[in-house]
Length: 119
Image 1 (cartoon, rainbow, N blue to C red):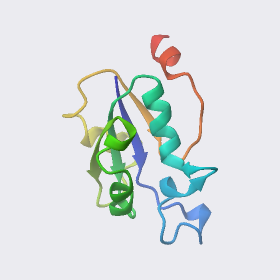
Image 2 (image 1 turned 30 degrees about the horizontal axis):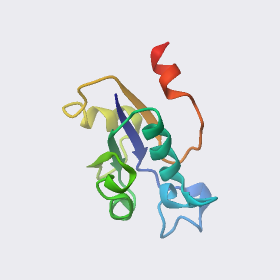
Image 3 (image 1 turned 90 degrees about the horizontal axis):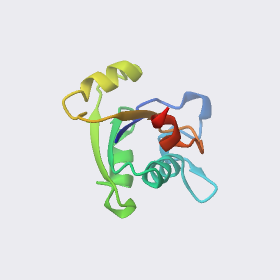
Image 4 (image 1 turned 60 degrees about the horizontal axis):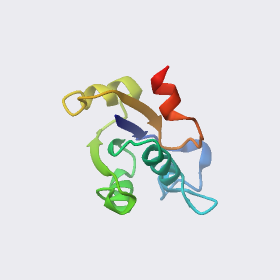
């Protein structure tokens, strides 16, 4: 299974906090928001992650790198202008070759991904 994490938004509702920090890197408890998502995906066996980035995307890519420190593989899709969920996934269609899940890089959840995909 693969995952697409949408991380291209500007985070305007969290301003001024997100003026220089993209929302997926904003710390929640002990880790950046998107790190919680990556750990959840790994817990459910997802090791192939694609991240769509736009606003301050270089900071997201620099922080999370290739994903090796989390035990996953991360590649990035750079959008000049945010394309929304469908547009971001469309850009990745050649990399998607399996069942995949789309998640937001700025939402915390404990959803049972394994159960979700089975049903």
